[in-house]
Image (cartoon, rainbow over all chains, first blue to last red; front, side, top):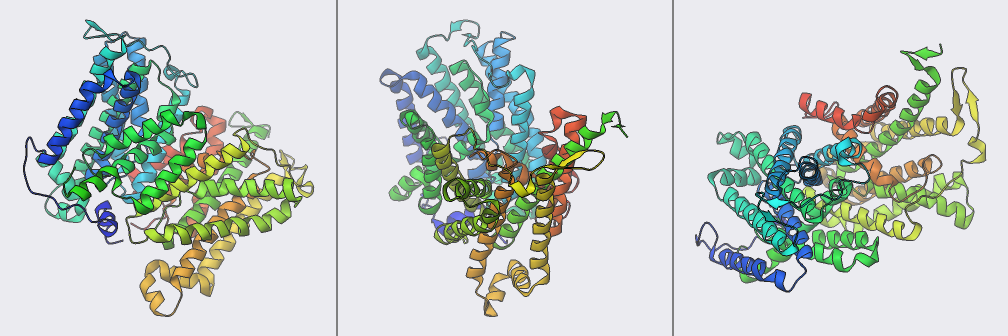
Length: 334
Length: 294
């Protein structure tokens, strides 16, 4: 196994789109800046013609997928246990909002912090191995957290935490109407999205990319690659926690579904469909999968089959994902 | 000897036996995963679904064709192993040049498809499969009653594991296999048909999972989720043992089953997580796994 980075796989299967070297605005290339403008415009007008609760669900999963993509797309680490941080963020936010009466912004921050702590421990264990071992270890650790959530008293076991109040933002603005809540969720998503963008364009992010391309070389250049990987894992876990926390406030409920391994599979699928390692791919992928689940809900267990088929098709024939394909067609990096 | 460490002896031995049986399945599953990984460099995420298919195939043979347990034990690994061969030829073989992660994602997707189809067809409540009449009843061992079927599962799994070990370590075919694991192009240069060997190895690993499913059918109820719940624990077992050695997989599998059984006696709440905790400890102390090569 001379080279186990995912970049090698992508290079063999799909040639990355040639990159035009324009520095653009705030680290975005011109095409990316255009796409960002489109996305913000969509965020601003969509609640007036689409159901806000559906949009909020979509945005929570989009942030979750972006957090996951930070690891797989920029460090080359496939975490198969990200549901643990997503779900735990949701449980913690639900608990502190309901039992301790915390305001929503504090509940979301607490959810993110606890997920970060969990990510620090799990990451510290998992980064000792690479490649598929890393995937198996993160999956096993997430399963451990799942069983913890089944048994821990504060999670409510099979019932979950129900009737979580949305509360008042900063103690002032009531979030009970869906539209107000939507603006908060959109702001959380956008902040998370821009934070990830900032991270991958910082000097630290450059080191992450070098680790993905060639870890031994990065080590030989004097970087402590394990520290960098651990930090990336913690950042990714905390953003996943923030996404989960926001979701539990939106729906007023936190359940075992969000910590289950199938949720970990779903976020992998979203990112894969959208395009691994693209900036906008996870958002598009999340939109596709959430919309699919919404419209195909009456098909019941067939949704699992369809998801499996999408996995297989993406891996065999469509490894660049939707955004990757579009970028390749337009010869820009999105 | 009614009590050991303040625990009633029948309870202790009962849980030990249960642990041994779980360990038998861990050993068989991790052995299959290790054999496949050795040659294909792919973590077979479909393994759990193939285990479940084995159990369902046994059930179908009995209910639809009237073929009993012993027929199932022979036919099911052949049938399910063949589906594995088809899967390898049609899909997995296209991914060898790519990153290993794609193999994992593909087999995960295939597992979802299989599980979803079975859940649609048979529901998720589970189907009963009767213990064959020859293996019903229990032996009185003096200190506990031992259901014959459970003893049979442990012995059968041990025999299968040892037979696999012998096949790989002591036969000419096994020597080819080990050589191809080390350096496939060189073995091919000697005139061995390596692609065919890869395909058959995958089929063999899958057949092992399927036999596991047949053995499990009378113990656990036959349901679509039975494999997935198992496979995640088996992943942890594989990480603990390291995939380098066959004997390592077997020892780790049985050992962890027993540890899990004992945990059920002394600290029941931790029994679901103990394997994962051990995995974390092993990773911190010895990242390559107990039997792995760094």
